[in-house]
Image 1: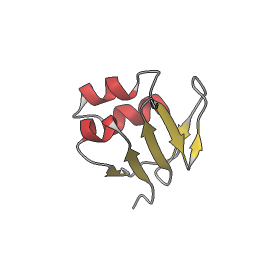
Image 2: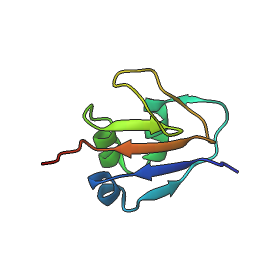
Image 3: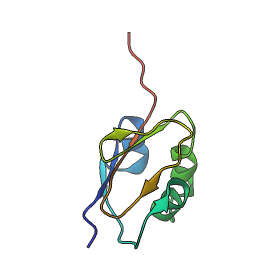
Length: 87
């Protein structure tokens, strides 16, 4: 059983329908694009939004630099974060 979890923040939680999804079970590590494809198999609209460059990803509570090579396991905590604005 996978120990990880998938978290969505801000407008992404509205689009995902929840703040948290269970992590699917899979072997080894997957690159970010394959992981997003896996978790959004039935939600291609959400996959396209998560892939937008302004959305950020954190793996195991580490903010991943934009454009970096990201590998995810079923034990990872993955968070998708939309752009923030403030005033």
